[in-house]
Image (cartoon, rainbow, N blue to C red; front, side, top):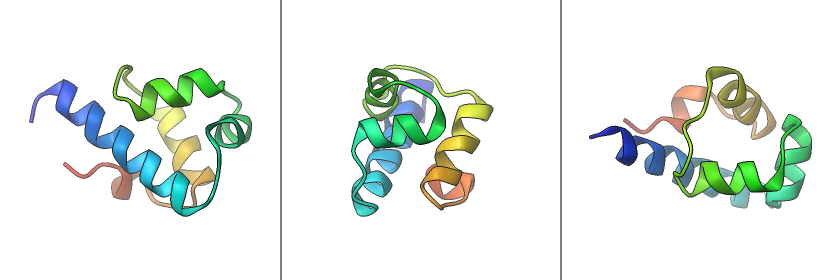
Length: 71
């Protein structure tokens, strides 16, 4: 799995969990101190995610970081 495929897989996992929690991108962004457009870029695999953002996203979604990384 190359880097782009990993970003896409992470984004899909974030989106799936966010939707399970019935959260909008705006709400998740607010919870982690980010913007809706940044959440969109993460979910679409267009941007890499730093460990700090990844930890905040996992905490907001009440899931472990490892569960967001399906690779």
